Amino acid sequence: MIVRISIKVINNHCLKKRPIFIIMDSVNMRKILLMLVMLSAYTNVMAGKLMSKEESESILRQTISNTPGCIVMDELASFPITIEQETRSKRKALQSLMAFVDAGLLSAEKKQTEVNKQIAFGMNQKVRVSAFVFSMTDKGKIFFRNDAIQISKGRNEPKKGTGFCYADKLEVTGIKRFLGPTIIDYYIQAVDRAEWANNKKIIRAGMIVDKSSMNIKTFVLKGQAAPPPGLKVQAKFRKQKDGKYLLTHY
Image (cartoon, rainbow, N blue to C red; front, top):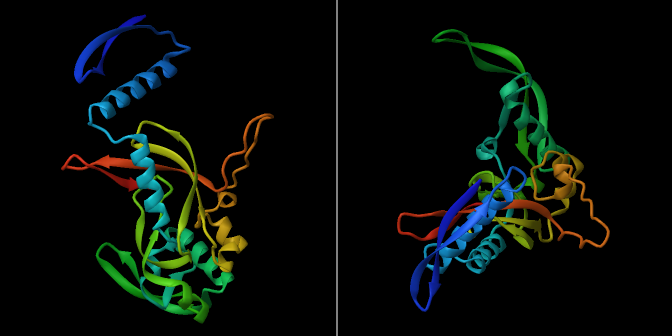
């Protein structure tokens, strides 16, 4: 299949349309589409419609360097924390809290307690259940913050709230690639992280910026440079109403 497209080229301050003929087949379709996206992004940058790669990388590096390494959880908003042992919806939270206990930030006590249970539609009844009650330790108070921020690794906007912080700042160690000027795959690591963040249960729970927490094995081909240290994640910029671009996902 032959496709005819036109791109705008800036030449002596004039925009000219030039046709390009491309033969597409099933093998090269993805490569050609990616090339078209990159060409479109390039022409938009040249026309002042998009930020440049240099600008987006600079904003990313500055933002990350001002971001602490933290673990944010809604459950940490008030103490003591009581979680029923058999509650499925709280299973992941319970695992994380137990990791904090193992790292010495929280203490846990198993006891019988009364909770409100729905026994019928619109009807609640107090019943006694087995639960874990968590309290903050003196060590935990050192690392606890009400204004903590946790990066989402590119999947969502960073989470803000109460949590434990294991590093005063994070660091971009390298750029893997640009998927257009507004999407960046990059490597990140924590600078001088706290001793408790090396706890095996903390790392296994995947709560910190650490490659080993994601069970990732890096294979380097012969003659190929090793990737930068740190965890590979993604950042995204979103265009705002005023036309400017804001780093929203990182």
